Image 1 (cartoon, one colour):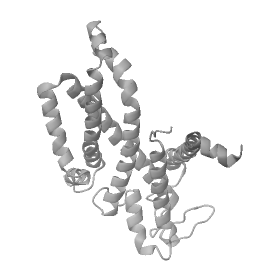
Image 2 (image 1 turned 45 degrees about the vertical axis):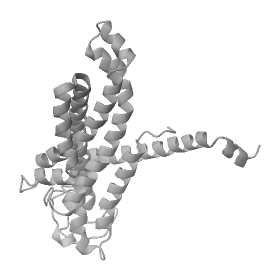
Image 3 (image 1 turned 30 degrees about the vertical axis):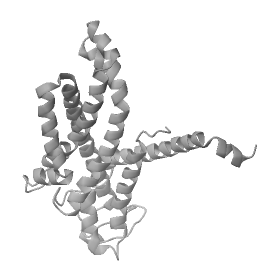
Image 4 (image 1 turned 90 degrees about the horizontal axis):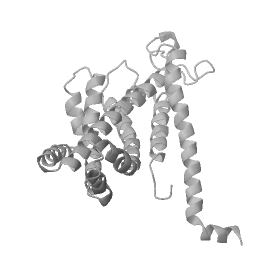
Length: 277
């Protein structure tokens, strides 16, 4: 049997192996970025330290990404910006996941007025664009505080978890297995652990990976238009904006944060569950 014939006979298995290899590569790249974000700020120079005599200095062995218009170390600012993006995105996704999952299970479990009230609240958030919610909350802090950005991103994302969990929980809680557990007097912790969590876990992992991408890109977008975090804080969107006037003489200033955003997006998207994996 030729290799071409074998490929024709077993395409799903080959696609599955390719997806596994791709996922492992992305996980390794993500682990490298996380390590860079966690360790870099402790071993690299102060990201705010200026050295004006090293204005737009090019990459070298001591400064792999050169220095910006204030003589600040780009690799140090990149490490702090990556750590800020990952930690803030993780906090937003964790809060949205807990809030959306808890309210979704509560609405599917209790039904009635509780379900109507939570569903009506979620529809208000669905009616508004997510970025508008973030902008409205972020606008309450003129100096672009981290807490307002965290609150805005979490509020914009919780509704996705609520709608998915509520829909799935309503089906699972009406199943014969859950009815049998109730007749046997088993409490809600048993139902959640044995019946809801195994079914909801893949969905939540997929939503969380997409939520990380959404949060990081939203922070960068707000920083790019100077609505979110403000200078001199090291943030990926701000770094791109500040480097634009010098893109022709110092392209490494903008390429570094863009590359980090691109890698983070690809890596988190690879964590999604697919039909072949």
